[in-house]
Structure formats: structure tokens, C-alpha cells
Length: 160
Image (tube, rainbow, N blue to C red; front, top):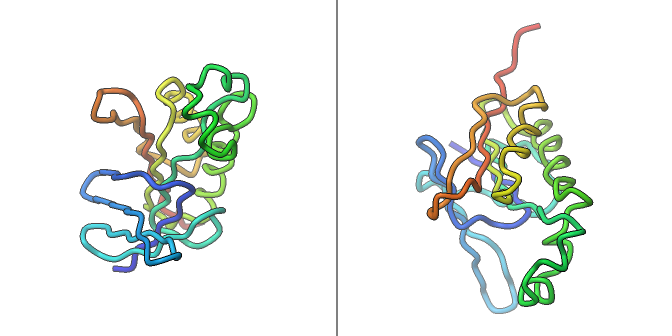
């Protein structure tokens, strides 16, 4: 089975039902890329805008509100690029765009997996639920017991 993944920033590991998607950075001299497998099958990784047909969309989008910049440790605020951290006034702009894009490109039954700010996990799940093309929406905990992942399935197409 051919799998596709689209991601903005890689998650170390996502476990969803029986699917195990693992994405690892890979470097060969000056060339950087990602190696990804799902249930031990190779997948194609696309970085950037979600604009290709996909069975799986995995993302760790920026989720910090602009007004929260001063609250970040300087080791984060001064090191990470702003585009990787900040997502509008409420911290949800990138997530909202990604959910809309994923609904357009995911195959019926496809998986959406988002890493989110633990303070905004319920808001992210609500945002996904408002996009009526998803179902089986759930929030999963990270290894420390914090709500950090939102998972959803693209609805099957209905005969019209």
C-alpha cells in the first residue's frame, strides 16, 4: 500500500489505532531530508503546504500566540525561527489553515494527526470538528499525560 505524509515540522512518533508512523531526520553531507515509515512501509514526505493527495497528514504547526512571546524562555524565543513558533493573535491561525487544507487533500478514511499546545488541545479538537469532513476526533496524551495530539479521520465519500 502506498502511503503519503504531509508535514510542516516532524513529530518524533505518532501512534493512531493500528498505524505507527515514524519520521526521522536524515542527513547525507549537505542534503537534509526525512525518512518515514508507516507499519514498516516507506512513505513519501512532503514539506510545506498541504497540496498533494494524502492518506496521512501529520503536523506540528506553530501554536504560540503573538502576545505570548515574552513568556517564552529566551532559549526558545531567541533560537527558533518565529515562523516555527507563532500563529497569529490566538495561536490557532496555522492550525485552522492546516485543517482546511487537510480536509481538501486527505483520502476518505485518511488520518489527520496534529501536535498541539496542551493549553489549546480542546480548541484544536473543536476546530477540527467544525470542519464537517472529519469524524472520530479525539485528543491523545503525550508521555507525561498532557493533552498534546489531536487525531481525526476524513469522512468516507457519500454517494450523492
